[in-house]
Length: 173
Image (cartoon, rainbow, N blue to C red; front, side):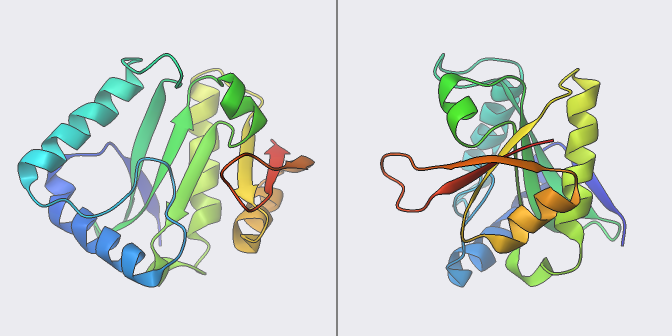
């Protein structure tokens, strides 16, 4: 099934809440950074969409990078995941998570979607003239690091950071 990257939009409110409820109920790691939990109102979701738009246009705290956020939509119009692309790396980004984050909702995993999403976000990076891309993944997330390796990722090292009990594998593509 073909996937598309879409800008976060109010039209996805119900699907977003459904996806996030599923994700929270699964107990699995939620990624990328901008996903958290369902919203109680369309007004809250609208503020969230504005915040993501501000992030894309560099209206962010100086500790963070300008970031483009995407919803991942399948050809039937179903929200199946999300991805993000940091336009540049801060010191923290360089030392940990890198340029790209992505996640597929639990019921849609093991279908090759993560590989397709990563390839699409790598194309978005090229369009922004980012030719060397860093990705970080928790060591226990075997599916994700295998996806990164499948897309050409070369392991640089494994790091630990304060506040995170699990090592992070850092890859360059």
